[in-house]
Image (cartoon, rainbow, N blue to C red; front, top):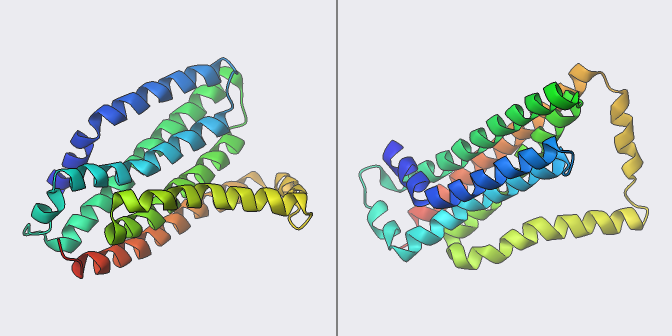
Length: 216
């Protein structure tokens, strides 16, 4: 199991190093007040959420799946390793986000609660993307699953913009969150990624069923 997770990190190591360089650059830009923290952490989450799909593409190119699915771990074990890879990336992102929160708070006296809520929301988004894309990738393959990524990202965004412009969705309600106690707001924010983890668990079960019935 650990070997399969390590394999994903080794396969994606060059991509990870490139993204790490971007993260450092964006942190510097945030420190200089040239970029908003919320944009940076959301961007990082979105990028890392796509990495498991890229790992799928490399596996398909190398015909790895045919070998991996015959390992003693079984098909469910191989699927589990890919989902644990997602969780490992999520933990790395959360750790980087918390470090950035602490840095900006100490140097700029930024609102740590606002940054924490932003981190929890972006983490949830980062979990929901692979929640949808991984079962689709197991079913259709990584290349045919890529259009679903754009649908996941752009359709909700466009829908929200249209609903706001039509007056159906009142974004001013978000301002009411400022009236909540900090502990209540932080507690509610923590529940969001927990819901994302629950959804990821359901996604794992679906992927296991798809992999069990698929011919490699």
